[in-house]
Length: 80
Image (tube, rainbow, N blue to C red):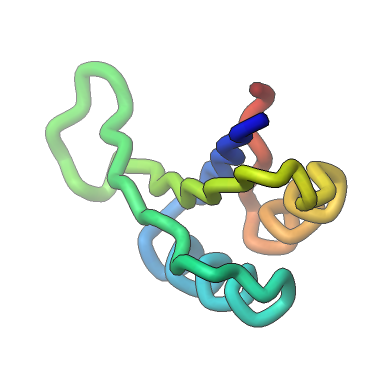
């Protein structure tokens, strides 16, 4: 089972903080991937959300804990 968790954050700074916390808190083998997600119809960088993508090949990360971490940074865990 290869799961992928996607945390949606309001800006790059929040995404970088979450990625750093994930690495320390969950002991990730690989650093999470950061992806800029421009909102539909918007070209301005200010209107972009940032995604933190966490690969979870063993299904060991608790979605509730990931969602709580994202929530601390005004984000959320995207439903699979």
